[in-house]
Amino acid sequence: MSDVWPYLAAILPTILVAVFFYFLVKSMLEGDRRERMAQKKFEAEQDARRAASADPNRPSSAAPGEAPGNGATAHHRPPHDGRGDPTPSP
Image (cartoon, rainbow, N blue to C red; front, side, top):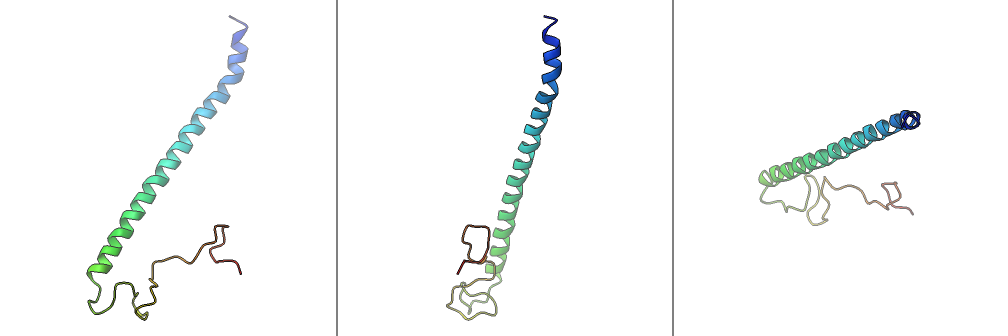
């Protein structure tokens, strides 16, 4: 049994660092999930607030200052081609 202690002493720091890393990554992922939920809730509240205060004569698809009928809204992001560049490639 005395032959095992040097091996345990050598592997124990690695195990402890792995456990620490696991909890660190887990908390980061949970924080990201909570942040995304809060952002989604905030955007839904803002959309509801905009819809409640919208001018009844303006179509709901037109953003303020835009011509009705083009379907563009102020809160949409530009097209994304999936390669990290937010603008489409030519």
